[in-house]
Length: 312
Image 1 (cartoon, rainbow, N blue to C red):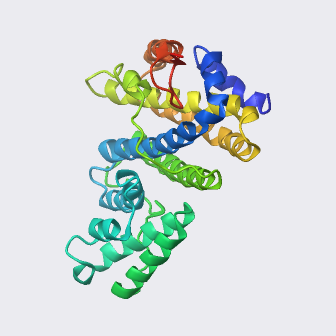
Image 2 (tube, helix red, strand yellow):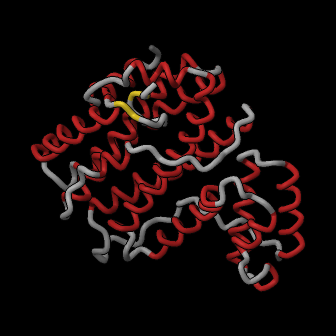
């Protein structure tokens, strides 16, 4: 398998490989639609989860970061939460509830940023043209307001940020940007293969992992970071496993994701190790890793990117 040096620590971290039965199901052409739609959802959820971690544990007194996150996620939220119902009226009602003529510059900027995202995701050209026409007719040349998460955190000299919080901001900012970019890439690939995005109920994998999170701090935060590490590591393993069996365009894309996914799981681990000692970290890794292996080794009544063994 290519990139063996990159994958070796990932495979050693996981307590078991993906079952062959899951791979056999994933290789089937009929599974491609579910695989890609759920992959897009996984990228979104990874970005949204990282955003929540950043805001809860480092962004309480950081209004700049709060504004950045809100602006960055807003265009993606429209695509996710209005899946399959994209239209000009839905778009206009979502961003301009009081009418476009009564909207402020920020609302117009967010709408413009969303249109730019939809263009990158290869939405229907007729819909894009009509939305562009509507925005041009109502806006005052507002620039897209989507954040790049480039602003620096407020000064640490005033004691606002601990070393951990500064590291969390740095690592989660990069992760969020990368996951959202991957979301766009999956959308473009879906377009190439004529696959439409739709609402797809989540499997039980992430929920099952979160059941292991303790309910007191800072242990709860450490456990959330460990869960994030296992999800990223399993994603990396499955991308590599799937790549040879999927259409070349998708296989090459999955190989291109390996390096960032491998770094993401390591980032989560390094953050966890900043708030609990090595002994406790290893104990929690063992508990969560064993549970993760059980989740993907048990029979699953739905097929998803992170599901277990298909019932059929």
